[in-house]
Length: 296
DNA sequence: TTTGGATGTAAAC
DNA sequence: TTTACCTCCAAAC
Figure 1 (cartoon, helix red, strand yellow):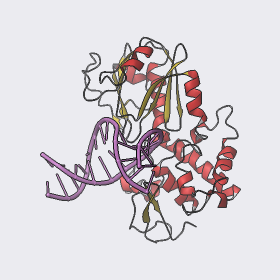
Figure 2 (cartoon, rainbow, N blue to C red):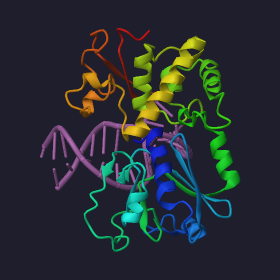
Figure 3 (tube, protein in one colour):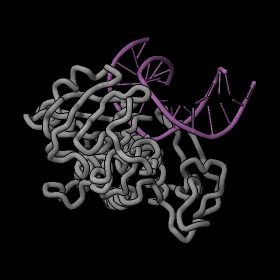
Figure 4 (cartoon, rainbow, N blue to C red):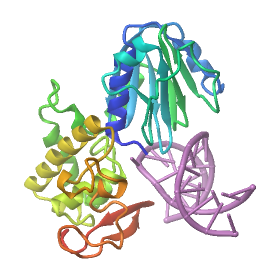
């Protein structure tokens, strides 16, 4: 379930709590035993997110490549040094739904593994457990480069050196295909990091019908989608959740689940812009939400 | 207590 | 286009 914003938060978290440290790497569940043995005892040097893929770089050009899939999640714990190092609020779990760290216990080392822990990373001050990932591989530098070459530009790379033309590249990939724009926004080779929620909300905000072929989009429409994706995903990194509605439309200081979106899971409710009932249909095996009244 | 669906993707038909 | 992956949780029995 995590879209690009969650994976970016994970990359930040790994950098904050583990960068530069030697890690014990194990696979309590056993399914990653061989890969864990390759990485065990190496120092973590880098932590990168590209779309929904997480790449943890260890000494010796060794990498841990993780994709959370639908329900994967990382859980973290440690002493005050560890939780205090986190710049994103010391979350206990980052994945399908974030859980805050209660932080009430005195740290006495990593707990006995509970459930199917695919990977456990342990430093002097804390630990991280991975469960339910759809991908978890030990990789070399060339493996990582090959995986990243399959991905389109990531709206969260805004402002990084070498990414000045990412918006143009997105527009080129989007506008060159006759596939529907609803499908293209979910294609990680067109744009990396967008999932079902951002897809629905971006097209609604742009007033674009998801059924339109990519080739029918104007340069301005493509540029607008890219700029809005940059903004919405950056907001998601900051907030730790996807929110695409405005503060004035919420009942409280933070939106309830249903208040955070305009169309996602709003089927049958009136469109906030034109009053037409929000529609729902399946597209390529995923649920597509849109307003037939004002998305053209 | 069981079922089904989920912010995802690849492989099999 | 459908199935499998393999986890959590809410809704239905």
